[in-house]
Amino acid sequence: MIDKVVKGATPKEAAAKAVADIPSGATLVVGGFGLCGIPENLIGALSERPVKDLTCVSNNCGVDNWGLGVLLGKKMLRKMLSSYVGENAEFERQYLSGELELEFCPQGTLAERMRAGGAGIAGFYTPTGAGTLVAEGKETKVFDGREYVLERGIVGDYALVAAWKADRFGNLVYRKTAKNFNPMAATAGKVTIAEVEVLVEAGELDPDEIDTPGVYVQRVVVAPREKRIERRTVRKG
Image (cartoon, rainbow, N blue to C red; front, side):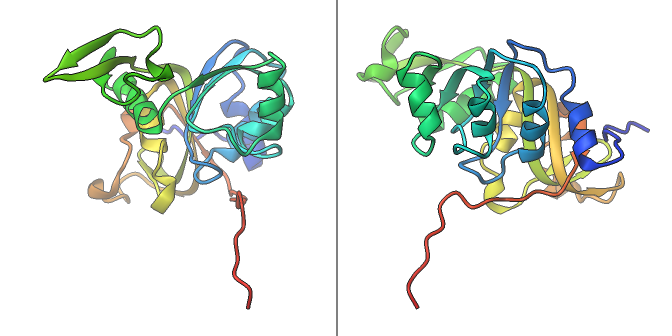
């Protein structure tokens, strides 16, 4: 039987084994939105490795001490391709000082670039960003009287994603808002590594509830997640 679960004496050890071959200069496609649905164990394990010059494709770069912000704080990132980076002071500092390269991409376009890369589509035209800075240096065409921008599909060397449940074949099920960028990111990596909270045996998942088929996933790590809240907002009693 195909068993994609990475073994380790502890979840931390398994996560370290799963990311052990990610080299300097690699391009990573990372799931999550803010701090929701991020592969925090895989990011933590990668932060302990002596790698640098990474390119990360993700909706955001976490916060100063969590998520991709951990890699940023250790100066392991060379370039970030994101939609939003406003919650990270260290990101701002590195970008303004010229230490970090940044490519902004509209959020829906970024999701579709991941999906297109995973589907083997080299590029697509979208009206989003036409006539703005987003379109600078890109090919444009007019369809039915409206201007469209050519955007390239994204394929990373590795994809790091977080799911709720998986079986040993690597079939993944996401839960609630964690089903954000993870399904697209999972298809966009040459090697996809998923961290999950619950592992079940083959055949226990209802085929209708599988979000990412195991054919896209090469490694599975079972680990609990801390699930920090990015910004807590409460009402006065």
